Image (cartoon, rainbow, N blue to C red):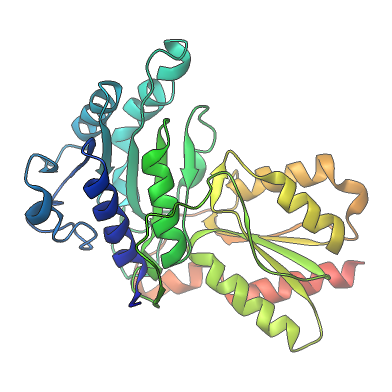
Length: 326
């Protein structure tokens, strides 16, 4: 079995589902002839034809609207926003139509659509190309928000997203698109949505994160282990609906929690998790919840970009503060 990167896992999942379901179509800017700006759709148009892999105009509003229409008519469209920072014009169609259609029609019409978007910083890209704004979508009822953190989870979660009867935002951390490889069987086996993945068991502190920051969380757990501190690492994977039970069970065991994410701190999705812990696990806590996040600014350009992104060292320091506090 060949080892593949996260971006190759995305391509593999799209190809599998298109081969097994004629209602699946892919659309977006440059997804056909060029295979996408990151080559996530490379080779799909040659294999499935221009009627199923559609190059669209440079018009995010129209892409989103056509996607809603296709899905409401019984297709399963997978639309691409070239970068997460380009998704703002799509939000009206996603929030006002895709996410509301099931409720608006009392279940008569659903929108089984997926919007894919390369997400986050770390590739020395300019403005609007490095944003982490998943929290803008986690507050929209009727919408799933999913973010894989490895090739295997990208493959399994994208298959599940395409098969889901409701709209899904699928954010792909581009910093780890080609960072490492792992074996991913092309067997069409989906991973469950709405489930957190416990990547490492621990007893002293819980580290909760998602997307590209899983790498820093695991590195921090390794560094803490060298000092005799046992950290449990949870990959949220599906932000909404949130599998809070898994997080609560871990916090009840460790008594401490560090929440790690790339988005700005104020009103980031980590704030929701921290609030839920305060509401439901307060008497289990041995120390205040720590948040390690991006800063409340726009992500800076090349020279300062890595100063903005949360580092392994900041996670280690936060974990130690929870131990010192108790």
